[in-house]
Length: 371
Image (cartoon, rainbow, N blue to C red):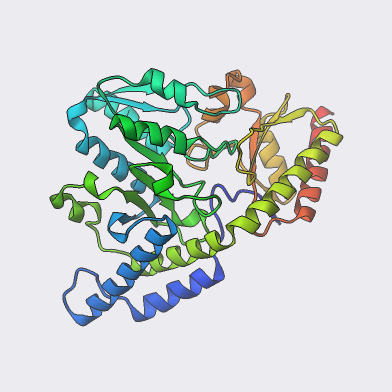
């Protein structure tokens, strides 16, 4: 088996799993309970909040745990909008945000009369600061830009955009789900007002997320609302363990991913296969987007699957709707050709041998498809 869909989800780290089991066994109390069992669980939660705050380079009182990355994005954006609603109802974003954001913004436009402006990327999928500056209006309340694109891996210039927005007093949210645990995610240096992360993208359990939110964004009566449900302390403990392990290994792993990507892309080019690989000057090497000249992405994905290679045709939250990846169409690729896209995403178990085998299988699939 060759698993190349780490951007969709990751297997749970063994140490994180052990922490989950230990916490579930020994600290099972409800953190809202006033007795000692509840207090012990609350102590674990507070420790995890401090740990995640340290990983994001912020204080624990600016960290909120959620049931998913989707909830993290939506709660953070909702809070920023409420904190800045006096500015107006204009929101700026990109055409390729995760569905947890794009669908939420669609609802705001349809039900609450918000106006959404979509920034146009360059040929690499990058958003330029000047485009943000040109789109800002007096009634702009929030800007939302992902840190790393989940379909081609482009890293957006969040630091520059955030620094400028800060001078304008405009709130800024970034979806850091694909960046966290792989590249530096210092929320202070990024100049963001909120930043979402997710457990199962960093070898933690599913059903757990978190977000950073500047403390001056939250009214006193909102704190309990942001974490109103019964807290899943074992999952949070496993999440923070997995995140810490991922970040500790991130520098060496980033170098390893770069080398694997260079090898893979060069081998594809040598074979002159009828496809193109999406590249960017500033790119997360873990994500490799491929567009076949003629072969449909669905056909390719199923063919790889039959050969024991598991990859995707886009974000796991959008597959199944028969629509091409939003990033690819945003790059002005015609809709029908955009359906020829597949994504490989590498992880901590990916080896050079895996990629050699994948290239061999890819060539065989293309040869079979031609006949």
